[in-house]
Image 1 (cartoon, helix red, strand yellow):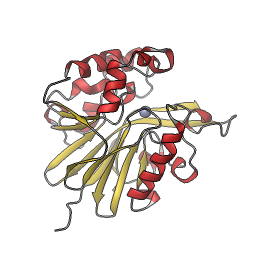
Image 2 (cartoon, helix red, strand yellow):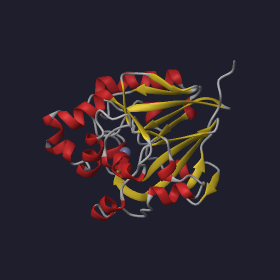
Image 3 (spheres, rainbow, N blue to C red):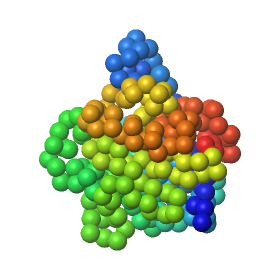
Length: 257
Ligand SMILES: [Zn+2]
């Protein structure tokens, strides 16, 4: 029987931010700037809604003074998704812009890689400066308290969580970042999150400058490219083209597939 297909939406919840280009495109375009946005993603189909990443909580957004911030729950409402009712939440990795909003989804089962969870929750290295810089202590505490509960699903490696939706362990940016391979009408698409900040990385092998393991990262690129039906079906975590180059279905919400 053919696998079910899903639609994928990108929901911008903050930005645009102007950053030095080498921050998102390692050691390249040293004198250039680049615009990026912050996103969450929604996978819809077969009567299910799976949200990928939580965005930022309003308190932290204020603290970090995030340009153009809208509560991710408000953005979801624009496509009739109620955050409090979401049942399935994939956390790609435990950086503040992807985990901080976790409390907006009080009824969701959370899928996160065990390696990623154990590093941020239990490894003292995670409290050192380069890691603290990208940590939301509040979001992390909330997640830590879920350890051992049914709401927290710790994933070991690659795993299909619904027919046609597979989590892929893709380390590099972080120790246990996961991407999401989704069966769509156009074949397999991959929500890559911060395996790349921008589309170009999947063609050039040049990742962002936030690196945990560069060797693992290159293998992750091989894995993602092999899984996706085409390179155009791999979606990065922060590219402004996610809003600008795809059909708009609501304010700051675009349909990718
Ligand atoms: Zn990010």
